[in-house]
Each structure stands twice: as structure tokens, then as C-alpha cells.
Picture 1 (cartoon, one colour):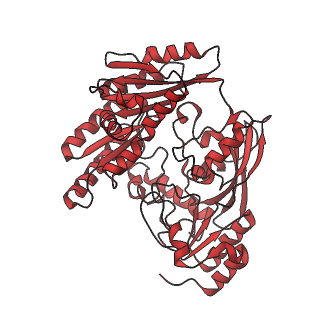
Picture 2 (picture 1 turned 180 degrees about the vertical axis):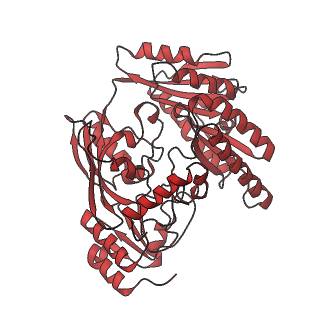
Picture 3 (picture 1 turned 180 degrees about the horizontal axis):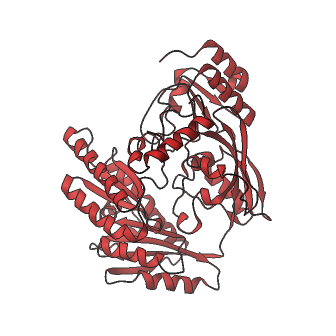
Length: 464
């Protein structure tokens, strides 16, 4: 990799300020990896505090043909923020202001570097929330959420970033400042560039500011747990729940292997009394008005009841609610403890195909002699498929990847998609041609060339 031109380094210091950039490898290394466990050392690190600085950095990178990777808080799991070709990592973490909370128009305007949790706190003070709530909400940035179209459990009722973003301010790969979208709940003038940029993983433009649709906080919410004797019964309950009018605001699925791991890792009252014969669990939240909540819960419970139901339980107070979510949050740490190098995929299938999906995953687990642990946002059909094994063992590594290959084929055969909220990045880049037809891929590459003619933005990501 060639050294950065002196003119580029001088120009970067002029654009960002000496205190906001560095070429020291010790400073750059922490910005060379994300939650994918991949690492690549950038040649320069910069912090922007204003959109004009972002624009100048993009123009410099074009002038000197330097790759540019934009970064939020580094919670990405698919390598989308790893600077695989070196160059500049431009962090937006210092662009972290809430610019407006407008209760009358039910919107917020925020810079890209603010965390999801900080935005939620500002919105809550006015009686609202922003619907996307990924598990990394306490740490992930709004810009990162938008770049990957991250969602979370509440997407089942309230939608993803694409459904909850009104407009964006961004800097394209050619260095132009672009404002997209509207401040109204309706708007059909021109092409929808807002939704195009959301999920594009920083390959078309750098999102610096967003106008976000806010939702009033519900009056009340009930937290529930349903235990089933087997995975099939739980999967059938999911389809029944989603087929009736009262949509829960959370509908999470956890299989039997996950339950076993939780027992050994988390110590709450709700974990210690899990029946030994529980083969699957649904975690649900139902929200709404005080007047209608009992009816809504009853409707969901009726749909959830089938021959495989072992227990239906409602949290009685805030402490039990906290215990239930501690159960769910204990799962990822438990998995990392058991298999720190597991393969974690966030595939999606139509809700009606979940029972078949889970059944055939069990078959693949047996065929390849690997453990598969499944959990996720069942109301969307978004299942996190975790393939456990020791990748330091060559035979196990091959078995894990053969299994993954068949998992992807299975998902597509069921009418699904290879990623629901994590994105493509590096990890899934070489598989997406299975899902997207050649003519559509060709058009995407043409769009990339229009917005980023010199190919400087996040090269090597998203498109094969």
C-alpha cells in the first residue's frame, strides 16, 4: 500500500484542524475494526464536526484518489466500517447534536454521530420515541443505524429506519452536498433518494444529518413470556399472532439451545424456573391505550395458545420486566462465551415460512454436525442463525461454511433475504448475487458510479 501523498495530509489538516486528524498508527488502529472482528489499519484518521469538513475531506480524497471509510461508533457486525483498502477513516462521532425536536410535526432533526439512546432520551422528554431500536442502541450512532437500515425488536409494529426517516443531508462521493426527502408525512416529488441512501452502507454518500419521524409513546405496555414444548409449536404461534389484528410491539423467538445457554449464564427468577422440557420461548410486548390494553393482550394470548404451549406468563411489575429482558440480553454474551468465533447471520423469511425454516435448520445442523442456535425478531421473520464451532479446527471450519452456504440457499428458496438489519458489508458481499439478479446488480453498479464516480466511498463493500 503506497504512502499517502504529502499534499493530502497537509490538506486534511487544513480541512479538519490539526487536533482532529492523525496519521499515527497508534491513533488509527482503534478505528480499523468493528464488531465483525475484522481489522485493517487506516492510513489516516479524521474527525469531522461540520458538514463543510465532510465535504472538504471527500473532495480531497477524490483529488488524491484516497479511499474513504465513514465510521460512526463501530458496532457494525459485517465489516462495513473496516478500511480494507487503507486510506482515510472519517469519524462522525463528534457530530452528535440533536438540532430539533418538533412535537407538533412529530419529527426530530439530529446529526449522524449522536447515539440512538441519546436521541431516544431527547424524544422521550417530549413524549415521543424513534422506532428503530437495535440491541446496540446504547452505543450505535444514528448515522450507522441509517447506513445499515438497522431496526430491532420494535420494527415488528413500528417499522425500520426506512419507514421512520423523512429526509437526509448527505455528501455524495463526488463531494456534493445533497438534501433529500421532506418534513411532512407525505411527499412524492422526485425519486426517493432518502430510501436509496438508507442501507447503502456509506457507498453512495455520507449521511451527516437526518430528519426522523417520531411516534408518541404509548400509555401502557405489557411484557409477556410464552414457553413451548418444541420449536414447531412456537413457530406456529408466531404465524397465528401475526395473522390477527392486534400486532405486538415486540415478538422475539428463542429456541431450546438458546434457553439452555441462558440457564447457565443468567441468574434471574425468570431463568431459574424455566421448565426443563421447554423447547422454545416467545418474548412479547403489547402496547397501547389504558382502555384497550387488556383486550389487546387477550387477543395475542388467544392466538399464541396451541397444543404445544407449556406456560403463558405476564410480568407483574417493573422488576419482572427487567428480569425478562435480562434473559434475552444474556443470550449474546452466553453465545460469545461458548463460541467466541461463531458465525452469526440475520436472515429473513416470510412469517408463514418460519416453521419450515426452523425445521430445516435442524436438519442442516445434523447433516453438518454443527450446533445451530436460533433467536431473533420472529414477528418480522428475522431469525439470527448462529452456527457454533471451532474455526481454528480446519475440519470444523469447513463444516461451518458448508452449512452456512446451505442456510443461504434455504433462505432464498423460502422467498427470504440474506440480511434483515445487519447489512452486507464484507461478510455477505460475495453471496448477494444469489439474491439479486444480474440486471439489477448492473444497475446498482451504475448508481454507484453516478454518486461516487471515482469509487472512493467504502470500496470493496456491499456489491460483489
